[in-house]
Length: 178
Ligand code: HEC
Ligand code: HEC
Ligand code: HEC
Ligand code: HEC
Image 1 (cartoon, rainbow, N blue to C red):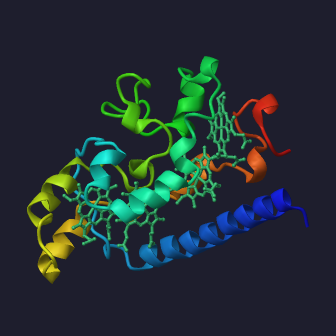
Image 2: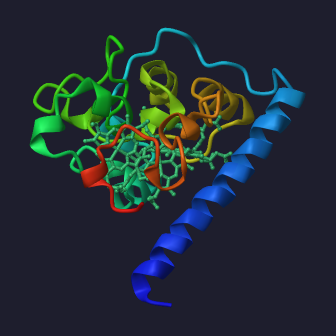
């Protein structure tokens, strides 16, 4: 099999596998409703650099992956198009979400807060722990309870409408797979 095919097949398989896992995860959390308390309401978007200060390993993984570059995929004429920004930026249309590349550069592309939800209060809760070597169980619970491990409601499928981008709003001439 030629190399690009392996890459395509590989990432498709990864996506399907992840969706299956998360599907199961969702089913499980529905069954144990209340197991993960909802984080505090009214959080604002902070941008991925803020998250990086405490989650450097996750930040580096994300930075190397494709989600960090999905705004750059948009040709210039589409970079202000609300139709595209829904899926190619973070929190577009929400009060503290992405507006444009000049005023909100750290919310361009699919950042941490697309999948975990806005994290301003999570950051406030965690700040006092930042210098500690190890958290107590109570501290760790407070930290974890203040942000989603994964936003509920099948968040991946909001953007990954169909396999290989068919039926999506990405213009046909820009699609790499058909
Ligand atoms: C001041 C430090 C700090 C900042 C800033 C911070 N976090 Fe955290 N975060 C923590 C700590 C501490 C935990 C508890 C788990 C651990 O010790 O790694 C945690 C846990 C998490 C979890 C696990 C939630 C769960 O239910 O298990 C996620 C997801 C997360 N953070 C995402 C983010 C995102 C996204 C941002 C940026 C919006 C962010 N964090 C900013 C310190 C921080
Ligand atoms: C495309 C969606 C997505 C993006 C973007 C993303 N994450 Fe995650 N993150 C996940 C998923 C899914 C998990 C694992 C959930 C599970 O274990 O069930 C996770 C887990 C985590 C955890 C918990 C690790 C643990 O072991 O408790 C932290 C912390 C975290 N992510 C931080 C970040 C940060 C910081 C960024 C941005 C630099 C980021 N994530 C970007 C989807 C994402
Ligand atoms: C806000 C929209 C959005 C959300 C939410 C989202 N994605 Fe994506 N994802 C994208 C876009 C846009 C690309 C295209 C990147 C490219 O082609 O360069 C992508 C690419 C991917 C890829 C292929 C590239 C790679 O990094 O290997 C996988 C796999 C993937 N996403 C899985 C997921 C999973 C699993 C989730 C949920 C945990 C998720 N995505 C959530 C928009 C999103
Ligand atoms: C419903 C969410 C969604 C919308 C709306 C959307 N995209 Fe996408 N876009 C994606 C996802 C997901 C991918 C990753 C490829 C895939 O899954 O097929 C992607 C990939 C791309 C790519 C990379 C080529 C490819 O096929 O991998 C380009 C370029 C692109 N989109 C441009 C646009 C433009 C321009 C618009 C607005 C006219 C737009 N997209 C609207 C979700 C979306």
